[in-house]
Image (cartoon, rainbow, N blue to C red; front, side, top):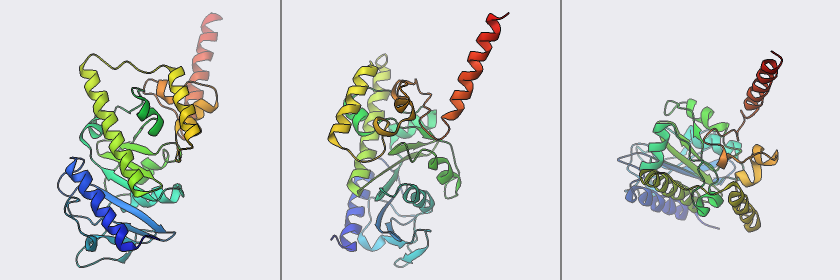
Length: 267
């Protein structure tokens, strides 16, 4: 069994990675790891993630209350967002929040990452929606993120950054890294005239590969309501992704459109 001290060292290592890769600036970002049902290790507020050492890391309970903290170190003010992920996703063991430049640019522009442009992104990430804007350190962000947690393993935060989560710290970090790489490729391909997207058939074949690999987490290949209903996946929705708790609203819109056309034909 890995000791708490070793996990703290791993958190510091991942913090340095996201800092060195330019995914955070100054004291931005936060990382947490679940070590038991009611114990979580997390990065402190007001500290650069690139210069942490194990004694910086705090321990909190499932409500975000401090169980252990050295000196003046306090848990990140965004711990509420992390706790909401753990509460809604029992399979998640780590959460990473960062401000990667390209992914955050899409979040600021209000553009979700739904275009299927490379096999690795389709298999590993699926789609990445945008959670509505919320004021940092309040429950507004956890509330906005919650509706997406059962359908995705990464979420953009409107005008804020990105959030990734998985069954290990390394996997959660890799999802953040993959998210940023995907966003950068999409941005640059748009500068070259626009990406040539994979076809729906190609996307479905990639979904099948993911299922064969038995990859863990939430993904359109397994939980997308559209796919389960025999409709086009969110990868081909043109950015109007309905693979979350509000997908029923699109049904009402469809019914309204059909009714309008029938009434027009009846004169």
